[in-house]
Length: 99
Image (cartoon, rainbow, N blue to C red):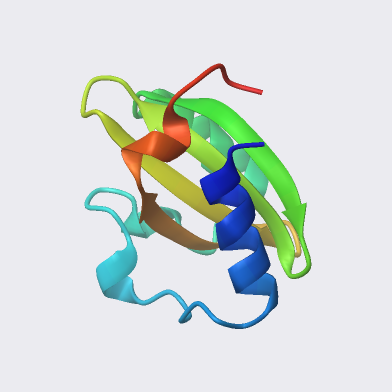
């Protein structure tokens, strides 16, 4: 696991990171908030994203997606089977071999 990703998970579990806001959601992905995980995955793939890696978190599952066309990296928090938050992630989070 990438060290930066570990730091974000630890900080998130400790409650250090602020909660997501609408401003944190990348342009063109806001409509995916609240959708079922499987539907969100299909939509991300249709929009040019590829799954990079994921990890279990205390409050759900975090998956990281890369869009090679837009050169953007996003993190998705899934809780109770639905997309709870979609946030822009540092491009470094999507570097290296996908896991």
